[in-house]
Length: 602
Ligand code: ARG
Image (cartoon, rainbow, N blue to C red):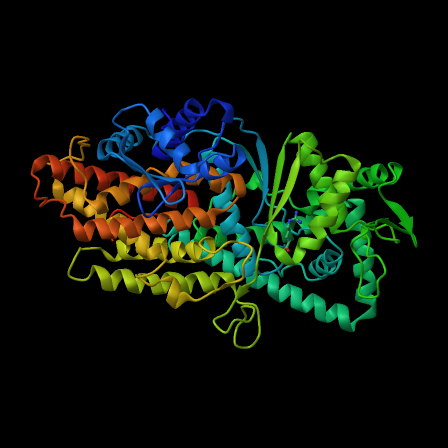
């Protein structure tokens, strides 16, 4: 695997060398190179440097030009304005660089120089509860971040911190104990073996509806029957004490919920693995020790019986400090003790150096306090970082938090089904009279397009922002949607198929490029740099933006430059097929990193 230096990096290096040759006293100065509309690149570094050295920026820029070695890289360079350099690279250099990318299975993308271990905490629904759009966001963003980091060579440990512990289980377990058949599944119907996904979806739904029914019934009894309430309280104590029968029943809730979770993740085309599901209960054995360490180090103090950590800048509306409560006055441990124990586990046992939490922005204060606490005691330090990749709220078309008309939480499964249904209609309509797809193919592609649409809508806005869940917009063929990208990819594949055996994608660096070819080529060349930025800042939306621009450049190229009927003869046909092919591979790779499929035919 050969990583390929981008043209921007090569030009930057040449300029930096020329700059230090022209002006040895400047040391290693940055020419400040960026992409530009005027030429391919513009370098502004001479301005600040001339100012610093009290020289004339235009003269300095001219000297840099003189010091540049002749070669095939730069076709044109001129001093402009107060002392910028406008640089045009040669067509030959563009095609040669792209050919080097094309020759590499990773498209010339290098591995990170010093990869580490990152724990990504994402896709963390709660046991015995329905998943909601917030869980969807965490899953979609987290999955993309995992893929992007792994592609960069980082070791990634996935953690699904599901809500599987807490006092509510006392009530649920007690109810199940008194009504033992409430979680039984109906006998499996239909022909066994066929339609695996459908079976999974159906048992997922049945599991969730069982849990819902049980939850409601238990709640009603809990609220109306004092004796049941008391029995439930005692059951919490049994659960915490690890009583075997109680734990067995608790397991049934977790297992039942997992059937449901996995059915949703499967619909989302997401690979969630059982060993990575380490819920709140997984840290039980560490809680007391965590508290002891915090108390002994003085990071946490007893206040009104509770073990608390205080912060200068966290105060309630009354001006009194609001502490992070690690242990309640009744001895119970909560969400914070669990998260602090999880940090210890991830840093000390998993040997992670970065922790990323893909969690709703409404939990930001919690994480701020948890991270600060961990820093005070030294679990987090210069070598270990924690970062909340906080995401905004999912809004309905009306701009209010996403709810059904009745004001209830929208069931995730239903929502995804609707997206698939709409996308299937689009696929069916578009393929009519153009390509023959069987019903099965239409259904398969409908799912890939529908799920892709949901993921892309989420990933194309920066995570911190709220975003509107608008299915009409999501499955639109035009505009910044995954459907647009998927069709661009499929269109290229169809051209490549049409070209057949006789005409192959082959780079021809000797050919002059049309403006639309240059624009596409220069954008293709930026893939690796964008990925580095995306991985460093955990920002999948920048990858989505890059891919959308890529598809747009491709569309312009396709409109302006006939491929199979290129007027310049067979070599130009091959060169254009080469650009098509590299665009397709880049789209495919980029979409894959976002967790979105690119069907070959649509
Ligand atoms: N289960 C929580 C929820 O549904 C999210 C858990 C986030 N992760 C964590 N380590 N606290 O809101």
